[in-house]
Length: 157
Image (cartoon, rainbow, N blue to C red; front, side):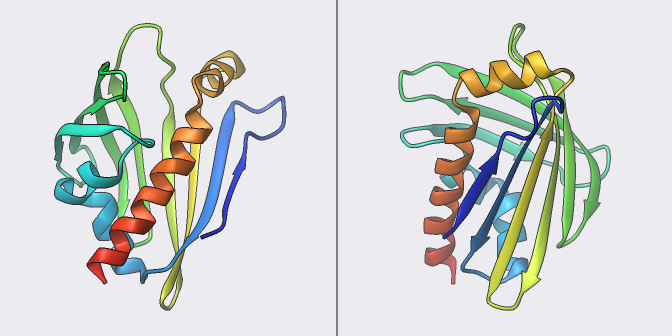
């Protein structure tokens, strides 16, 4: 798997990540949109996900509890904005932890037969919020989550 993370130009409050997964687009879509799969890959190494519920439709909610390796829990609540199965998904933070940066996220899945090119873009409200996310290793967690998803997909093929 090739993963490229571009924290972008200094004047744009965005983080972009692209990677190529060794699975067809329909299966990658399933891994991104079904809670029973999301709990197995979401987050970095050592992260667990004790709760995930998703109503994948425009206006639908995604409630998620992510536990970091040190035991800290992050209660996440997102709302889906756009759902175009199996190629595009976008969501925004509805509620989060005070002091944590939130972002508007866009996921695009490119169909390459037995492979899928994943493009993930997080738009932050400000460059300061993007820098805060990077200081918390957001890019590393994204990379490790993509690696975990690749491992999950191998078991689903």
